[in-house]
Amino acid sequence: MRILSGIQPSGVGHLGNYLGAIRQWVSAQDADAYYAVVDLHSLTLDIPPDRLRVQTLDTLAILVAAGLDPEQCTLFIQSHVPYHAQLNWLLECVASYGELTRMTQFKEKSGRQEGYRVGLLTYPVLMAADILLYRAEQVPVGDDQRQHLELARNIAERFNNRYGEVFTVPEAVAPPFAARVMDLQDPSRKMSKSLNSPLGTIYVLDEPDEIVRKVKKAVTDTDGEVRYDRDDKPGLSNLLEILASLSDEAPESVAARYQRYGDLKSDVAEAVVGALEPLRLRFLDIREDETLLRQVATRGADKAVATAEPLYRAAAEAMGL
Ligand code: AMP
Ligand code: TRP
Image 1 (spheres, protein in one colour):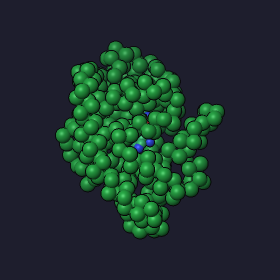
Image 2: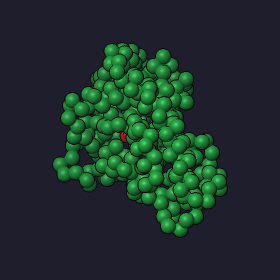
Image 3: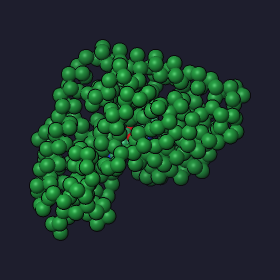
């Protein structure tokens, strides 16, 4: 089974990235898995070049610290493989303007910025290129990426119909719970790298006391009943999902064990610290050895190029280049 996924180096990863994506990546890494730090995608945002460079290596180190083994899976940096940007252009000539302007994420993000970059509109095409270049069958992602996956499927099918069978049509795989971890301060919006909500976001490199403080301050409600109900009790249900995900059970059965919000919060904090503290400590070790990280990236890029190149050539040839 061929698997591919990606994460942007736009900032330190958070608990949503960890539960929605990275944890799934680790458990799927013994399949034929490709995981990319998608630095080209981060150019859609305003990040100083030096910061982007640092964050790209930080993100790579976080993935290794989370348990991805470069011996088992192919771990690479997107811009090291030139075929992503090249296939992107070919696919921009397959995707339509209308389908890109319909993307929810584009509508949200473009509404927040004046003079946004064209890349913000076309970015799902680059994401389709990331996936299709590797003939990925499954793409482990959080819920927010489902619509982009649907677009990648449409682009693959349209290309195959128009130019001949080149691409595999991919499928999204989201975890059963915590596929959409919400901001702890505003449970109506997802936890995110790009929104500035320090108290509402648990970063994977937060120290234990910060995690405890953020969970204790998480916004809930005042009716005092511990019950899983995402519509009526979004804050509490978010905490239940986090704990459910970390203990591999259903949020309803987690809810049945608690009478008091305070007890639930203590256990959520403990479970999150238990998952993230080993990651943080390993990160501190791994991040120090930049030579080793660069070796991981070089090796990953070599493997990725070997897979992507023939696919790119087949697509270019099919289109008449
Ligand atoms: P990004 O940080 O946008 O590069 O996302 C990397 C991965 O994390 C993608 O698979 C996203 O779907 C996933 N992800 C991002 N935010 C969340 C969230 N709040 N809850 C669950 N998954 C998320
Ligand atoms: N767009 C994804 C996000 O913001 C990241 C991403 C880029 C990705 N390319 C991908 C995810 C390919 C899965 C497969 O979360």
